[in-house]
Length: 172
Image (tube, rainbow, N blue to C red; front, side, top):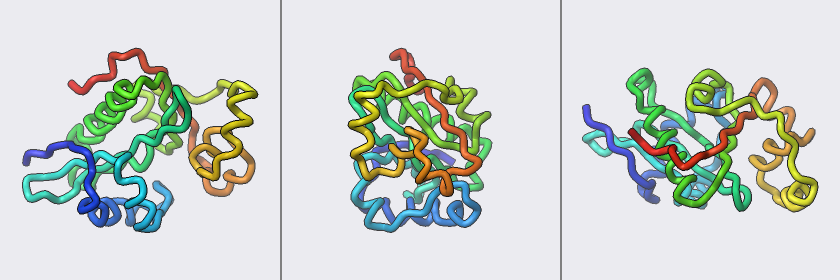
């Protein structure tokens, strides 16, 4: 079965939701309202099969001039082990490189997967001036990046990881 990756369209939002929703019940991904997906559709890439069904998704959310977060990276159960997650992540990293970003953050339970792609457990501190600017954002992803206490109940058990981009993050 052929699967292609492309930018998401508003018509893909319900497919993204159908893919992600079961994973919210197990705590793998955070649930979102449909309106949130529509508002962020331009951040998403989708993987679609020959019938046009969404079988994978992932988003790249810009957080700062040099930083973005990989969000909502998911593949349908029957696509696990096919390399689709790898392809999706590489496409998101390529998008980050095209935007001129130098770092990509993720919050994940899948430490091994992200480690194989060059992500490392985050230990760096944020520059105080940038930290003060980021604190003004209502975005929960930024709160997770900053490791703020108010998001601890939502992220318990997740690992904060970061990757330095070198411009070679291109799909194979």
